[in-house]
Image 1 (cartoon, rainbow, N blue to C red):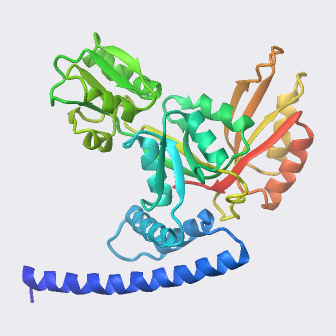
Image 2 (image 1 turned 90 degrees about the horizontal axis):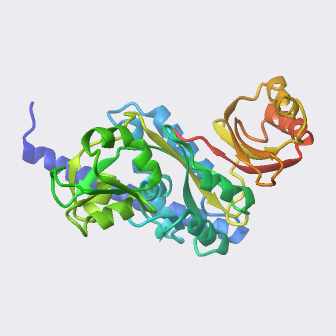
Image 3 (image 1 turned 90 degrees about the vertical axis):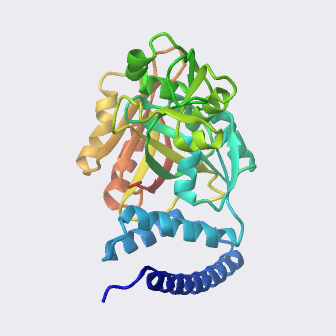
Length: 360
């Protein structure tokens, strides 16, 4: 028998009430866990535990919900439960509507205290000083490569990486009018301008390209002048009341940005192993022939995969470099532990930037 729309709505209302009852029970249990953690002096937020919970639910899913939807729903549930104890204070590159804000919400859920910052330096300062418990910063883009300022800050900062988020980045041209006619200035973060340069060359070759601190700041400024346009997300457009004059103008259809979640070790120690982990390092080697090759030999010997290798000048005036490296695995994994023990002995400088569950 085919049910009518009113009958289905009654059933949905009933299920919603059941869900509310179950969520209330879950929140009460989470509160008990929080009390135990407070008594023990342990941290409330454990990203590796939440990652394992979500992965387990996705693995057991036999219904119509997509894995991505399950992750989003349960992250919000866990965020709401955590906020009953104390919502996390999270610093990120602002203003409201940036991709970094979206990454913060994707990682922590929306039940957080947001602290938008004007620069990467300010995010690091806020997180180091305790104004925020966590910071979220861009690490690298699939089109334009690493965000060099973030690497430079990580090198000298006491913060370590405890999580990562990978976002599919869609850049939209936003302005007070739905047309691209009459645009004189395009405002965006330098990375976004670079990621959209082919489209801009073809469609707005005469428009000035003006770099600003963030894409959301470009959208905010575009709202003040009808001859200006910003490159940003749809969320930024909605935040500042702008039209989408052109959708998805990024040159690479598969454009992604990887973000790191950073904090002081006193706020959250290194997450425990999950079986799908990444370890980030920065090292330097003596300036002699074959030093870089020798440094990498232990990784091959112990079967440790290297997923990123970037060099940055050491600024010593001696043509020396720091190498930023990402490895698959956790320092407690036997092969990683053995490789790192040998690896460190070959380095003139060695620092673990963080170990954390890999993003989906």
